[in-house]
Image (cartoon, rainbow, N blue to C red; front, side, top):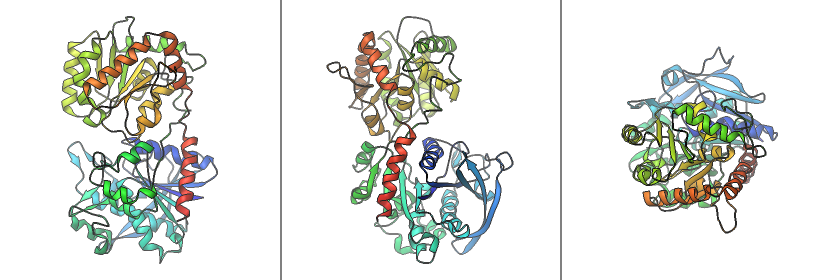
Length: 480
């Protein structure tokens, strides 16, 4: 198949979150399966044209409202075989951040990503690229399925193209005032409750949900959750209406990059077959963050500090957890409120707790390797990568049964001796603390703990596995 993968961020070129990881890994896995995969993203300020040896491929003009904006296409490579198209437009993308600054979103984000979405079908026309599938991701590309439909009648390049739209987090929707509709060049006929109108505003994510041939999200459980009022963010009715076209495919991780047997960030390598080095990593981590060396389990968190990630129930559960002869390390940034609360808690529990208010990839890897348990008490979690990294590094996840966490962690049963982690259901401090206590009880049984760790390290969440599921999804779209 010929596949055009459209995303607003792609690792390693530009990233703010999980979308970039997916967009930088899935195309490579699909290419390895024999497909012609190409990527399109904006050329942001941080993407250095000369350092990446980008070449100019084409210039064309993108219609916006009553005028046209010049657009240049630069090309580069991801790996050996994946061509990357960069939409080069300085007035929109030559900025400090991808979507905004610490003070908030850029006020012209609607115009910026309407331009990006409208440039994609023009790129296909100018380069005479006829994709079988355009795989769109999140609200920044939500208009592409609609453009593909409306332009197909007059564009041979799109006549047989089908669109897949992936929701990575339904909470981010790209909602803008209704007058931004004029920028799209689309008829006001689509500005209806059945189209992209949303409480009197324009909703770009809704456009993708309504007009894509097939919809996916990043776990099977999340695909069901978002069809309910609790998780649907006002779009549950739209998703229920399209439930027959909605699929859930769990993200993967790169097992070459995330491998404790050859991770250069770790003080000692280890594997499922040779696990002894993990204890060395644990003691080295304690020494690094200046925690006392005591015979106690070490809990780790690498997370965004926000309500979504369960920080509210964690704060209330902390006294009970830390009373159980364990230590806790938290790495991350986020809401200022949690910066303050966690710093205060760390000050009260100097011998039990360390909080590092930053993001550091090498330190994150050392926490994955050096911890015994990994906490993810999320309110909701579309997929989650932290639990997969933890499993790969032999660190047992303690997670809430939601979204991708429910699909990737198997609750341990002392009766059967099977499982890869510990899950809880109720979103409360009491349920979180009780789950941690259950995990710590099994930690005190070395034979059982060894089985849990080994089972987690042997699970396959590679991108090859996910790519094969996307192959099936693309075929469903082509049958439309």
